[in-house]
Length: 225
Image 1 (cartoon, rainbow, N blue to C red):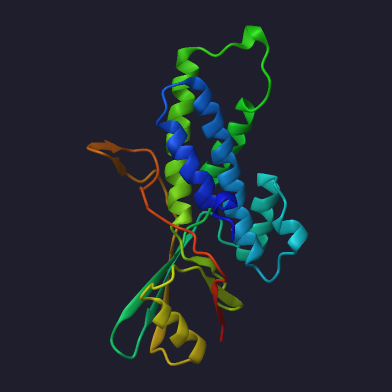
Image 2: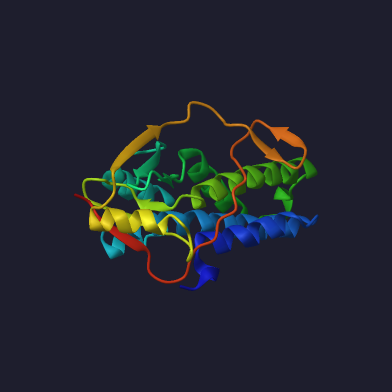
């Protein structure tokens, strides 16, 4: 898989552009973030057995949101899947949705990607607002990209994406072979903005900073039982 066209690839470029001081870099960062959100939603949609290829290739965020919600029926709810192994170990996997807040930010990014009239020249205050919105959006997308569970319907078929060498591959194989001890599923829906940390500063806008890398090759599949 070409990492340049994955959500993680778009996110990486957006974060690097945000380090630049000029206003033009903010516009390019808005483009990369917008594409990153679309890509993450397409990644989720493409792993659902109930979503067609045509639907999963849609670029319209609102359409993708409706399509994903009709398949997963989770909205902003996050899931943690715990797999208990007979060896006594426990492996945990996260489903982190593209939140409704992140969807709104991505749609607002589109407002900055059109030609503007001379009289609509941006003020410094507006550029500062854009930067703050992009920082928040990159944090939220980073959190969404941290999830390894890309098809969370336990009654259908669980799909995972893990890096080569991840110790949790053993748990996925145990699920495939039916040799695991048991499975526990936790779900929780945020009721307010979580606290996240950038350097030494504590922020109250979403979301935690998470390092994530999309693996190349096919994901591991588990057929639900």
